[in-house]
Image 1 (cartoon, rainbow, N blue to C red):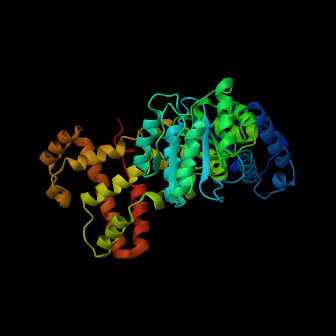
Image 2: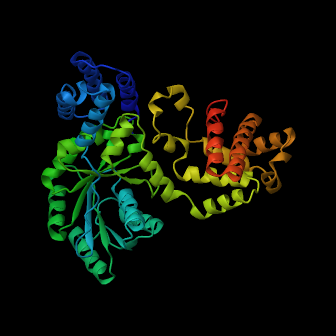
Image 3: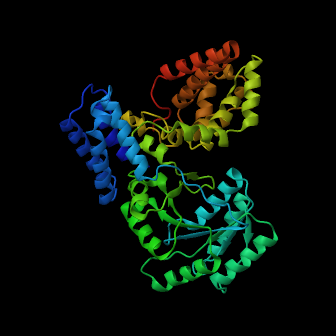
Length: 457
């Protein structure tokens, strides 16, 4: 998300950063560029106008022009105002009610509601330690109930069965009664997709809302619809007392107009953003972190949280113990590291959160396709157990055999071995010199990668 916006803004930001002096004239010029970038990102026009006006008022005041570093002060103003328009701070679900807390999911057809129900169940189970039940009140879409049952099994949530012949209100009332009996903390209700112009369906969900009185009513919307997402959310908000919005398919949205528009247009916070189809593809929406990413400052806090949640601590501890004892880092260890990186979204998923990515040329970024890590793992899988334990055995003929087994070229095996050697040196330094050794090893890896991104084709 925000790739095109970040690219446009990062050049403007970089020019401002180095300015020793700013005038009203060059501030206006910079804001024109920001305005065009926001409009191209499909941000709603009222949002763009309000944002530019607020930045301008602060920029030509004492705060920026009298600053010792006016360029940096203006960037801070832009970041603060972007954060404010998206909601200032993260807005978590309010579950501080007698159990079960009912969360009603509403939205358009095809927005990804059912998948989001499962993702939210997993999030509440793992991050907030809640016992979660899910129920489908979608009696119209074929196999909607079966789909939710399958997803509930995948994420370990309790599934309450329902049938297409039942009325949605009866289904949810029965689910609430069962949730009370079984001491469930949160009940998430999936509903049928509908449009704001479908009067009968809107009347149905209003009646359902009135009957079950949910503590949270979340509107699920496809972020790729841009500013239309904000307009649709506004229409739903006029019919239902929404408490928040979930933006789905954000990994396919290079512009980010919906994320920047929804809060301002609807007055409702974006609570979560969904990426991909995997059950763990749901993140709390942090406006301040998102603003930093838009301005190419990265999102290191989210990256740290991601590592804490997804890295296998047992494997990490075993590797640390192995290195501390001076034992050699081998290709089995490298494979473990690569698989953990893949769990965090691969190189593309990590790059998205690093500062300065907007400055990387397009042709270099294009080399990061998401296939790099699986290819490296495939090469290691093509080796014998003996070769993985003792990489020194890998002569030319063995490398050719491994490449053929992985469906790649010998040059790809050579690149992998070069990266392995760099990692092995880093681990050896860590074993010998503690943290100082580790830092020197990392600098060596970053400075001497040679040959650009791995596996360019």
